[in-house]
Picture 1 (cartoon, helix red, strand yellow):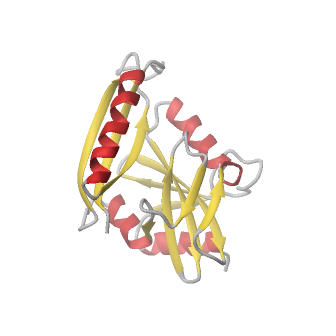
Picture 2 (cartoon, rainbow, N blue to C red):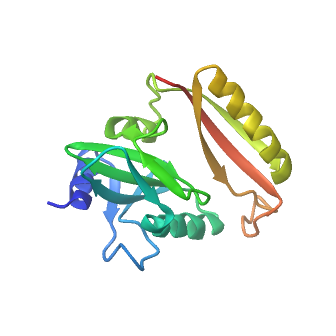
Length: 190
């Protein structure tokens, strides 16, 4: 059984709605797996490695970035994850349209149980707080490093997820390119 099939079976075994994308891979704009949970669409690009830590660069998950970009521009709430199998363990790392490099594992990597708890909203010990930061892109980009430095100095890490801001929230057709909406999940560094 290949790693895509294995992760598919793990997620199905946990009663999650997951679809294997036929003919995914190079040249496809879709990741290996699509997961639907709580009105959100998740794309999962599956990799396998024989050594840790390992780095993945944009070219190895560009179809996941294309997927995030395409669906979020259409007003669909979507998140993307790079799933890496090492030996008998799974590591999942969220990526967004600005991600160019991922190291597995790192402080933002989830194991399979943490990923499923995150999906189900069961925070457990890992997640303790979240922040929503909205406004002009320039102002947000000035404030974000201050928040990050402050949290890091106090033993916290953060995962930032960017979502589009629409000019008209009701129609959700035109994205306001001058504004941004960030969701920051904060957890203690172990």
